[in-house]
Length: 94
Image 1 (cartoon, one colour):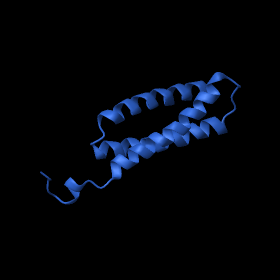
Image 2: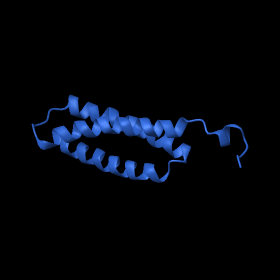
Image 3: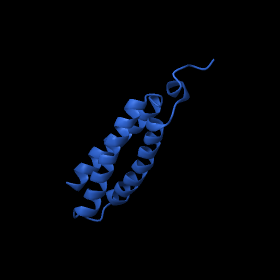
Image 4: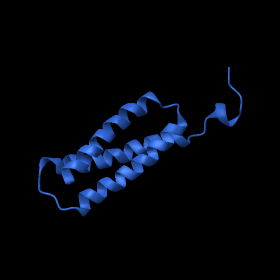
């Protein structure tokens, strides 16, 4: 179970990071994926610390991926919730 959750979260992480850089200006999607990342982080730490697992090479990668996912979620929250002067003032700048 530990290995399966690791690979599911790893695939999610890669897809999320690649997608994030191509949609930095889409605030709705950034917010949505940031909150999905929060769920992935909670699941990741719960699986890492809550389940029994053998000492293997995946242990270090699992923990590292969880902590890096926190940084990715922080970046997504920043881009999702930042004030944009174009939308905030209802006019465009020339």
